[in-house]
Length: 260
Image (cartoon, rainbow, N blue to C red; front, top):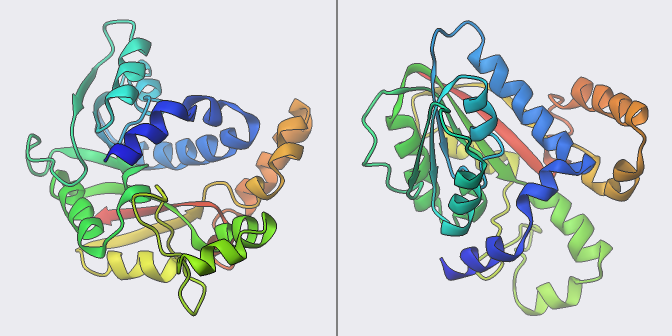
């Protein structure tokens, strides 16, 4: 817990999503949130792990009824500071592992866009999904974001020459799956890990999306693009972000499920 608090106290998560390379992830995620909201009358939205409110506050300002749950006090302070008063949003401190303050079968769209990054055991991952699914109404949508394994092996282990360090620390399995603990902050998964979690629940997968695709492999170039070129990059990214042969190479993915 303390490692997570220290990370978010010093890291500018809000700024990351505002820079062009972060906008790709943000615009892609919003694109699929809006698809889930299409045709719903007065939907209720829950964001678990709302961070600084980049998604929750935006949706509340658009008039959607939003409940935002966030664990880290620093992030909650930033979220609340954005509110102008009058937005239909309820903000509370809480954990993805315990949503007991919220009733069953309540929300039309439940978003878990950060907590799965920081859950290191299968038991905790299943518990977080179970809690999110419990509060989602039948027929409602559950959106789960993950950090993927292979980009870290490519960019961090080999690209930044940390191979000896991670091998000495026994942070890699024999098949090159990263082993994370709270000290490393981020948990990394593969597509088969996500599918294995989904298989435990009464859900149908609507899609598995690469939310930033190839963007972070060339973030400096992306950030330097003029607006027209960046718009073209987004067009390209949107055209391939559902291609399943590319999913595992994306730094972030979005698993979109529907509760039976």
